[in-house]
Length: 173
Image (cartoon, rainbow, N blue to C red; front, side):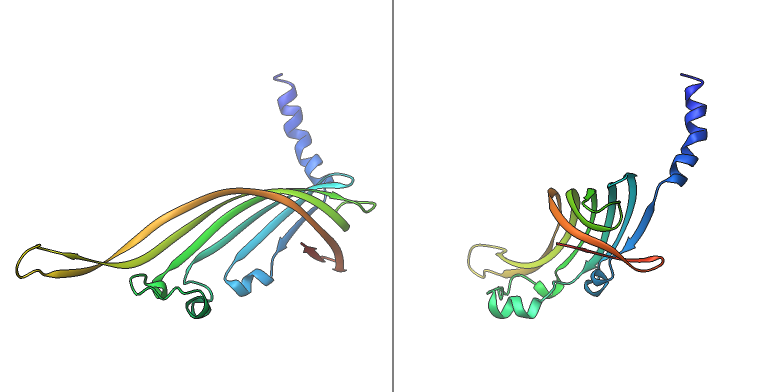
């Protein structure tokens, strides 16, 4: 065992160099204040593993005006204009390419995603300070602060093809 470990450490760089890798950035997510990067590594002739990381800094409620107009979210005690949400997610996704080799062509990919959503929602509340003659109603604002953690999965289909020597387009649904 002691002899096997150094041999493995010596061979590991050679094994890593023999594999194909791709680093990808999701450009469309930048429009929504999301930062999404992926690393894909070929492990077998038609199979890769894709690891993704997504980060969205805390920001206001998307489409707030539309939600207020059509969704009936006009409760004055909820301060939706001050609502903030952010999230991070890690996705692991083995991909089976149906083409002749990995990293090109149509693929099927089961995935698992672990995400954390951070929320801040200010709201107003009122209470009577002294139930009796000369009642004083006091209104205060508090902020609900919370985290939602989720684990989800699914099946994704996509295609990846080269559009330049070192540039590829990866489309999935």
